[in-house]
Image 1: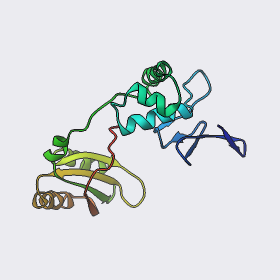
Image 2: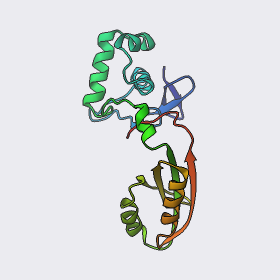
Image 3: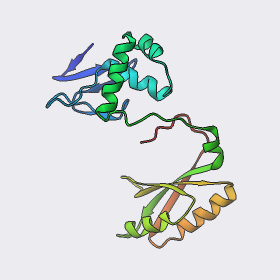
Image 4: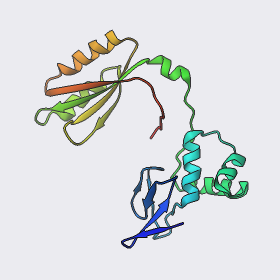
Length: 183
């Protein structure tokens, strides 16, 4: 089913969510293309991607049941999504992975002047830093951290705040992970 609004085509994804041609889709986190032979995702592709996000080990039979397609068709669509690069791989999350770093946080940093590259280099040297993200808005960087205890996190945050050029910071602890997608 397609819905046209002001000349823009919308495709139903899940229940009441829509994405439109040529734009970024928040459901599958990819762009929809229709020209030059580049892959075009439809409602069934989005259903397959959505189910695989919930459970990367879902069976072809279960995917066929959800989408209303045959198992052979589901398999060929999955192959097409992998070959085209929309799906980069399949993964699992182990409970032990979260146990290794039980205290995780996101620290937003405001940076003075032009010291961002130097600050990122310094942060890369901290073993507790899991990832560094550039962002827009009030904060310049978001730093993911992981430690064994809250006290260890406090020490790391103190070190981060003392880096020359860090103007201000705010940290949020991650209490639980509801969904995790490796990008």
